[in-house]
Structures are given as C-alpha cells and as structure tokens.
Length: 305
Image 1 (cartoon, one colour):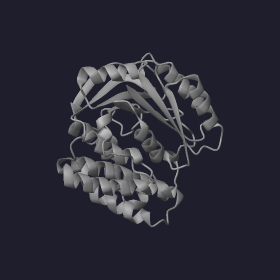
Image 2 (cartoon, rainbow, N blue to C red):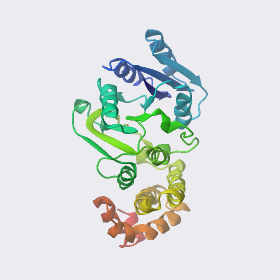
Image 3 (cartoon, one colour):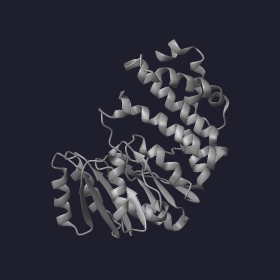
Image 4 (tube, helix red, strand yellow):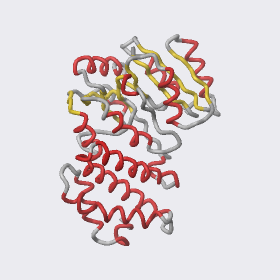
C-alpha cells in the first residue's frame, strides 16, 4: 500500500482540485493522510468533507508547526510500505501512483522520482526510465543537472527509508536538508521521464523575494558540508557547487533589497571561496560556471547583475 501524505495550510482555493486528482487514481491500494496544519480558512472543513466521501482518506488536525512538522505527523501514522508527499496546491496525473509503483517493482529502487511540469497540458506525458546509484543521484542533484530536483514531493519512497529519519522542523529549505540523507539510505534511485506531477507556480512565491528566513539555506549548506565531510567526502566538490549557487542567490537578493545586511559580507566570502572550484569543476552546470566567471568582475559589478 502507498501512503499519500498531504500537508494542508490555508489552501482552500486549490485543495479540492488536488484531492480530486488523488481520488482519480488508476491505482487503488493507497491511503491519503491529510495533515491540517492549523489552517485558519476553510481548508480543514474541506479535508473533513473529502474524508466523509472516501474511507481511504484520514485527517489529522494539529496546531500550526510548519511543513516539516506536518509531513512528520503524516509519516508517524502512515500504514503503507511506500510513501509519497504531495503539496496541497499541486496535482498528480491519474496514473501517477500506478506508474511510480510499477517502476518501483521493476527496478527495485528505494526511491522513484517522477518528473515535474508547470504546464497542466503536459501532465502525464513523457517517457523513459533511468536508474543510478545513490551517490551518483546525490551528485547530480547537488549540481542541479539531468533534471534532478531535491524536492520531496512527487517521489515514491520505500517506507524503511524513514526509520529514524524525519524532516527538520523550524527551518526553511527542508527538502534540501532532507534529500541527501534519504538518498543515502537507498542503494539506487530511479528517475522517470513521465510527468506525473503538476507543480503550481505562484507569483508571490518566497523564492523570488527576500526575507530573513531565506538565510536558512546557508545554515542548511553548512550542515550539509559537515555531513558529507563525515560520510561521503568524495562528493564535497558537488556540495561546494551547490553552496556557491546558494550564496550567489542570497548575495544578489540582499544586494537588491537589503545591501547593508551583515550576511552580504559572509555570502560574498563564500562565493570567493568556491568560485575557482566551480569554474573548473567536473559536472558543474553552465549557469554556475558563468556565474563564477562573472564574480571576478568584482563585488560591485556582480551585485548589479
């Protein structure tokens, strides 16, 4: 059985469409765990309404604790031998669970990654399957190449991966913090080319604007560096590439919105520490190489890009 875990917080506008896509699945051996994380709109009522319509839907109402807290609450009560996370404003294709489950059976991989799309008309399209060793999957995800994303959503996990593993609570970038720990527990990772997950884009997404919580990514990267130093030092060049990209992103956001912030200096120091390695490193995507080259024009010029 598959446990579908959906954290819910103030998404009354999109929640019904998400849940209808779950009920439309061609694969029927699943349970849906809706974790109402202290919603203040009608989301909790919508959850209860859908639970009354289908016995496979369970609802947890809890005080607001954030995305990681909601996911962890779902994991704690999950009955399935496989788990998938869906964001409550997104949609999955009717054959999503069937496709990922059959791929898990045929490949034996501990994690099956479906492909994403931002175009609803492309949902369900695409083909091809690629299975790689966990270390290689981690490396490509850190380099952000081969379509490898660190998001937890849209992936089918073997339940055993969560034995002793949970999402870190109280921080942003929880997926970046989580993915490599999960991947390291799987011998192989399979990537499916079929677009089984529709990721809804929001104009007000936090990814495009500055807030103090954005700096959590730098702490996540420091913790990641220590973990790889202790456990998989051969992948540190890929970690440094991702750290460089995160520092560039934060530096440019700060330069535009809060140029006097103390983190401007520390992020620029991180950029300078890793830019040569990124410029000449193996597996680095072109965007990061170009960024590393542009930093040599100087801090003032780079901050205006």
